[in-house]
Length: 232
Image (cartoon, rainbow, N blue to C red; front, side, top):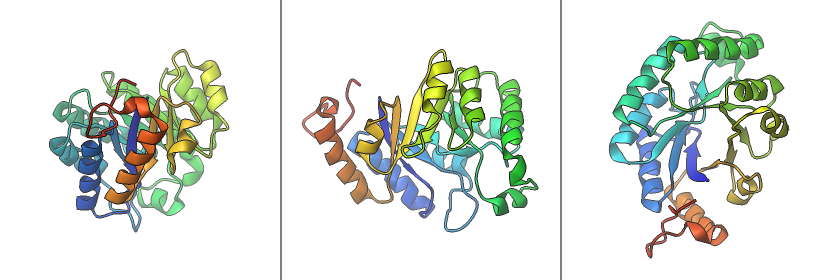
């Protein structure tokens, strides 16, 4: 299991970078940042943030999530392909629909069409970027997204309290991989995920997560300095 942290992006960019550095120092595997365009969020350009973090850390980098609906898929391919060149074998994407009607309007889209836009833009992204890294699909309410992930042998990402389509996905996928976003470690571990990301907003929370991890997963202790990277 890959274990990491994520931020929704409601911090200053420099603070987000600081969280990533602290996450690496604590020994976590992955750092993810969400894409938001409305206050109080500052993470409207996750590729810029992740590129800066790539230069400061050796962490695996991801999104939580990338808006596949309101973004031009050709632009997504260009930006993330560049990030992959800067941080080879360290980048993957979690694609999501978004849920704020006002933001859809800012990009000339309508939230009522978010599901067909997700499918259409994903197919375009696949055709434009055949060498793309691993892709996960954020699934909160639509079984069609679980089906899409299973059909293309991609991963499924869910919130720890929104798991109604996980069994559907696992039943269909040839190589199912489950990612979980959680507020608390125990909530995520209960789902036996392949990747677990815990929400943090301060370095103190990363320190607490490190302590909780060492208690819950003693096998991940790899050295006397109590970092959590291990053999899992």
